[in-house]
Image 1 (spheres, rainbow, N blue to C red):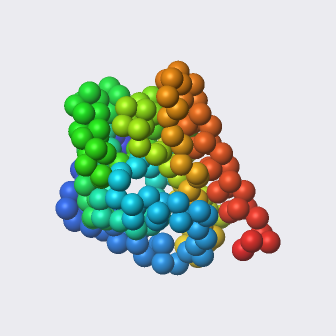
Image 2 (cartoon, one colour):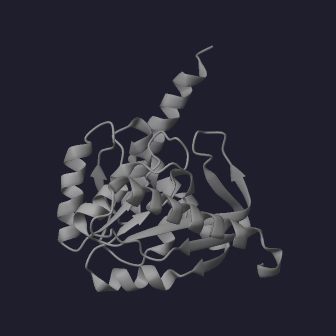
Image 3 (cartoon, rainbow, N blue to C red):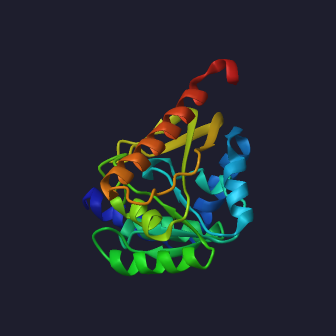
Amino acid sequence: MKPFKHYRRKIASYLAGSLGSFLLYWIISLLFKTLRVRYIRKEVVDSLTNGKEGFIGAFWHGRMLLIPFIYPGENMNVLISVHRDGEIIANVMKRFGFSLVRGSSKKGGSEAMREILTLLKDGKDIAFTPDGPRGPREVLKSGVSEAARLSGKPLIPVAYSASPCFRATSWDGFMMPYPFSKAILAAGEPVYYQEGEEPELFRQRVEAALRKVTAEADSFAKNKRDA
C-alpha cells in the first residue's frame, strides 16, 4: 500500500489545478450562502476601498476561508507563499477575482515586498496572512508591519469566526464553519505607523490589534443572545 503522503500529494495537485480550484471556490461560495452572517465595522473596509488610496488587510492563516466576502472592491492583491499548499490558495483566490503576489519570508520575500510597495503606491489593496505559510500560529511576522511602515498606508486587522465550526489539527488550526452556522466577519480600526516608532513596537501593536479583532469575532460568534 502506498503511503498517505503519496495520496496527499495527488490530492493537493488536483486541488491546485483548474478543476479542483473551481470546485473549492463553489463549495466555499455555497457554504457562505447557508450561513447567518453578521458584519462588524465593515464600513471601515468599505470606506478605504472606495477611497482607492490603497490599504493593507491582515488576517490569520487559519481564518482565511470567509475573508474574501468582507472585501467589496476589485483591486485586491493577495500575498501567497511559493509553496505547494500555496498553489491551492492562489488558484482559489484568483477565482474570487483577486490578483496575486508570490513570496514569503523565506522565499522571494524581498521581490514580493518591492511589488507590494509599488502596488500600494498605485492605490491597490494588499492582503497578508502574517503568520503564514508555516507559523507559529497567530504570531505576526514583520513583513506586514514593514509594508505598512514603509508605505504609510493604513493596516486593517480582519477576522472571522463561526459557531459551530470545525477546527483542523493542522499548524494553523484552520477554521471551517458548519453549514447553517453563525458567522462573524469583523474589521478593526485602521492601524497607522507613527513617525519615529520602533519597528518592533509597531509590529507588536499590529499583532495586538489583530488578536483583539479575532477575540471580538470569537466572542460574538459564541454569544447565543446575538444569534
